[in-house]
Image (tube, rainbow, N blue to C red):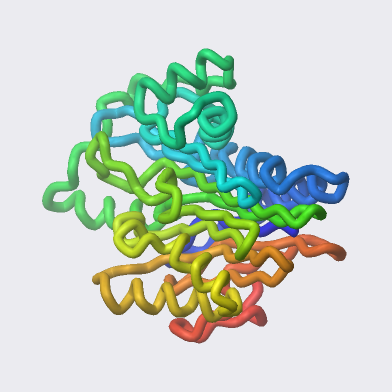
Amino acid sequence: MILAHGGAGSTPMTPVQRDCLVEALTIGFDVLRYGGRALDAVEATIRVLESGLFNAGLGARIQLDGVRRMDASITEGRTLRAGAVAGIERIRHPISAARLVMEKTEHVLLFGKHATRLAEHYKLERQPRVPTSLRKGMAPPKGSQKRTVGLYEEMEERETVGAVALDRDGNVAAGASTGGISYMLPGRIGDSPLIGCGVYADNDAGAVSMTGQGESIIRIAAAKEIVDQLESGTNPMTAARHTLNKLKKRIAGGEAGALVLTSNGRLAIYHNSPQMCAGYWKDSGKPVVYLYFPNRLTGRSLNDTY
């Protein structure tokens, strides 16, 4: 079973984004269908979503100083191994760099030029150079620019891509990849590369991948909180709803979405933002992609299909 998302926010996904999400789910499910590991399925799914249509990989935002820096993480539930990169540059698929950290080092998280050097050492595919016209970055909005910039941010607000998977051996895995947020200071790190905040996986409970306002997600360690509730016997929808309700109540502007998958195959896709670009593929049938998911905060349900 595979779940994937392309971010949570207030703007609809485009038809090409929907097609990309369907393709990602298809590739991830094929890995599982032919006996592959949940870890492999998560990486393969996210690599598709890093293709440029979402704010990850090739589609990552340019930061204030004109540089594209990206974060990613991946974790698996059998041994609790995890790998992550933060502020990595020039690499086409940061999720694969995160897996290198997990499998080729004794560490969990590498930052900046050191993460980039590791990825280059293992000859991961590089991104094209940022066009010269963009290298100066974007100046903070002033005066009459603010309205235009506000519209731009609404149109480009999706912040993260992610996936969770369960394989035939009962192993779960989770991953996330992002290009950050508009007008972020160079050096800012969100929830996506932080194990327990943006992602978590434990075979004793399940796997979670978050999306949304990274600073809020970090402050309540949202992914680990949901997994802890799963381990105590809470069903995935209740665990996600309880955590996101807490996020909204305790932290101003705390909007987020969550993919939740238990080790016995129960799933939930939940968000307290107006919309969430997400989908899943279970053991049979076809991939299911929606813009709204069951959500008591917004009144949305699975009947509201894209």
